[in-house]
Image 1 (spheres, rainbow, N blue to C red):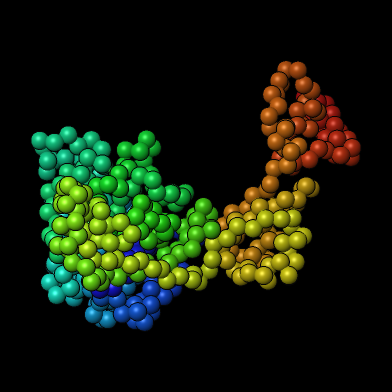
Image 2: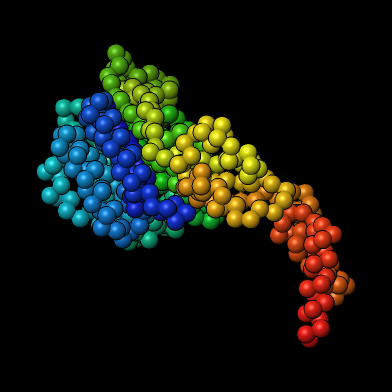
Length: 408
């Protein structure tokens, strides 16, 4: 059976003041085109459909269009809410959507939501984003202060069936994964969950982190966001994760017998059978990725202004891309952003590189009472412009100060 695993759509997001709506529509259309080509038998959406718990009407319309296209293609969808979503809004209309094959996670009620696919021998479990406070009331006899304890409590109530491929769709931060600037991670690690809690599942479709990556084994994966949402993601390669399950020649009973012979417990059997892509039930899960190409990339470039405005430089890539530009000029530049936008219209951020002189000036302790106004102004000029004043500028500053003193 083949699945597409996607997450962190963040529909409605703005990046550095720029609306990403058209870029999101473009990338969602690309995912739909891939689905028509690849014919997956299901779509796993691991949370953060929206960027806000109260999304705009335009964002809701885009998500509605996206899900409706899968319904028209008769490709089932299993989706959960993430930390950016409102669980109630994602769940709204769920019973009606079920009839079209769109399965939206309900508001957490103390247990995993389970879907059985009898012909394919696959069970899909939905675990929306959880906070300890959401779980605590369903397990009053247990101490639940951390996300680790919350997830453990929920999963402990679930019995996975032998002879089935068990898939978990989950939106949490697994310890050991790499994060970037556009993600919300709690200080102190209270939201971290150890990857060992999902050992029993054959494939774990994770959302929350925007960089595609595995956590431990290949079959515990973050698919990443379909678009770049911060400059810390500039080097990421975005993709759709393709998950395929198939029956191997060896039976589950044979592997289980081998494990029992070695004195392994059932849990140990599950972990042993999960190595190198083998699953709990001795099925094989293979994972591949299909690249996604954005309408406009999000890039970082640097250099002196004159060089960046040369045609051979800006024509080397799409100058319409969303850019973070760092200018390395030594001299002061008037209206740098205006000159750059004549060539690069979608500049999201402009920085000026600090040279050694500037850094040294910032590290000096300014003792106001021991310095003349002229000296203080010269230091201010140095910090703002990254270079010292020339003689003409010093003379002009001195004349201005003399006039100020006369007026006083």
